[in-house]
Amino acid sequence: QKEVEQDPGPLSVPEGAIVSLNCTYSNSAFQYFMWYRQYSRKGPELLMYTYSSGNKEDGRFTAQVDKSSKYISLFIRDSQPSDSATYLCAMRIIQGAQKLVFGQGTRLTINP
Amino acid sequence: EPEVTQTPSHQVTQMGQEVILRCVPISNHLYFYWYRQILGQKVEFLVSFYNNEISEKSEIFDDQFSVERPDGSNFTLKIRSTKLEDSAMYFCASRWDRAGDQPQHFGDGTRLSIL
Image (tube, rainbow over all chains, first blue to last red; front, side):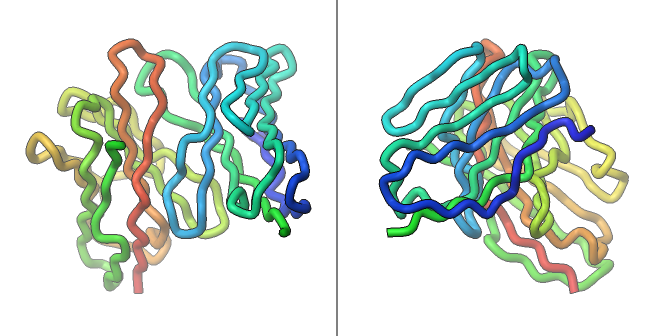
């Protein structure tokens, strides 16, 4: 079983739709969870960062973590064409150098 | 907003040649990382660096790879004798983190093409 699994898509939705992106993980030692956005030929850009189970909201973005199910989600409300990108989930343990383990990334297109 | 900068943006090298990828992390950050992303694949951890030494490395990071922080601002990744399979995007990241709970910030990467 892969440590972090993420559906690569592609996912295509109309402008204004609510988008739901998800990752599952197998390592219960993961404690910090991140969502990065990656535009073509650019580096990962941090969107959301959370530690606790539950929801964290920032503008149109909501990150949700369910540690009991080993499942994290990112919701995008009122999606815009500029949200079209690849979304990467990433996670890490607390101890040590805290390397990130990434999902495959989901390619998202918002159609005007 | 402070950012991680990487140079060059694209490096083309003949197989067997040495290559050095350069990064300037965010100035007050303490932890430094290299990741790579082969086209169409996941971002993969290569190495982490703290207090002037490697703190963790992956199995990808073999004897052909080395890292260095030659001065107070630069962080480099050297590949001694490049192979075709080293072709990838290489991302540098840094983290501040005295408390242990800060995220990593990434540069825009260097695209390495081995011919």
